[in-house]
Image 1 (cartoon, helix red, strand yellow):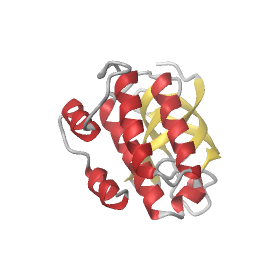
Image 2: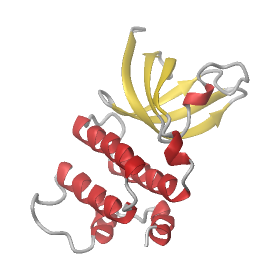
Image 3: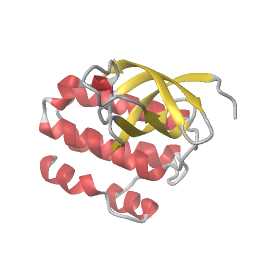
Length: 181
């Protein structure tokens, strides 16, 4: 396997502690789709990458592949969505978007259009109060973009449609629904 360095931007879908100071990340990247990376040493107090690794943060990063892992090298924050994080309803909606994207695409499935949708909706959360409408529009856009729903056709119950596509319930949906009434 080559040890070339690649770089792209992405949004963190999930993170899991690994070993003493490392973290395993799932990132939806603009150019490579959903990736699993090892971020070495990020849990050390002195790590420069430490603050970048929050779920739904958007970052620019570089990585190398070795025989066992894809390793994150550098990471630079594009947008931590700090204002969104100050509002519980907006944070819940951001988590909902992340969960849907996380479940609807497979590893290494490149999808720049879906990436643009996710970034666009994370941006829209900042400036809107109509979070319920935003959530339903997000489902609609995702399903049309991925070919699960014909463009222009009305969707009576987006939640039912997305759950049948994913074939499972969305955990953050209940939170989202309660908070977005």
